[in-house]
Image 1 (cartoon, one colour):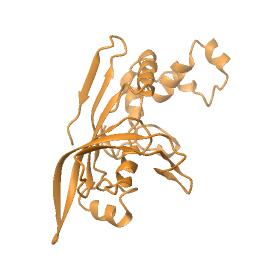
Image 2: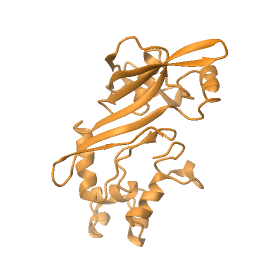
Image 3: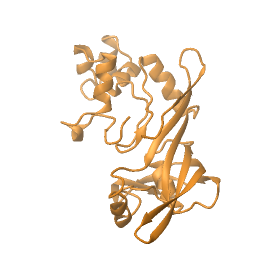
Image 4: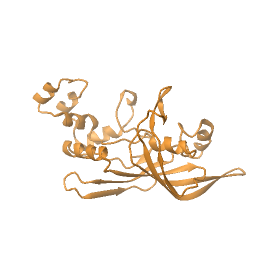
Length: 235
């Protein structure tokens, strides 16, 4: 997935190309039946079953087989199921934490520990529904990290250390990595929500997107059970 593209269709993405639309076209799942079959238009499960569709089939169609999400500005690997059966299997693997995801980020400052774990609950902020944060009543969120390198950014006479970090989220909360790095006072470079207004404004003069990339994913093949791994280089 390229940076700048939204994954799922919604009322706010009209006129904007989404990953979901590309996948629907590629998998050829747009047909008269599937266009009318969604949960909002056919709420009665008896009607769904009479048409020969199970709830899992309807969810597969409504989401075009997209099993998880990436933020709009995040680039990298996105896992998509090609059949309803694979969709259910992969969803279960995510729920059971069998899917291993790796991200690469560039964070402000020098993270002193070469590796570690961030384990704090994350939830939607009550006073700002577009943002998430560390909340006592949030959901369990765990991210392991490893420092790959320390870079230095020269801006005038200032030389700021930056940490190139590999991250493995063990849970899949919205904005989890972004919130966790902000929590340890090392927000991601060019993050418009969590790096601070002034910092992100200066960052985005250099890089007009967040420096966060989904670089690897491992999961069990839905039919064979074989461990499958895919990698994606930084753009």
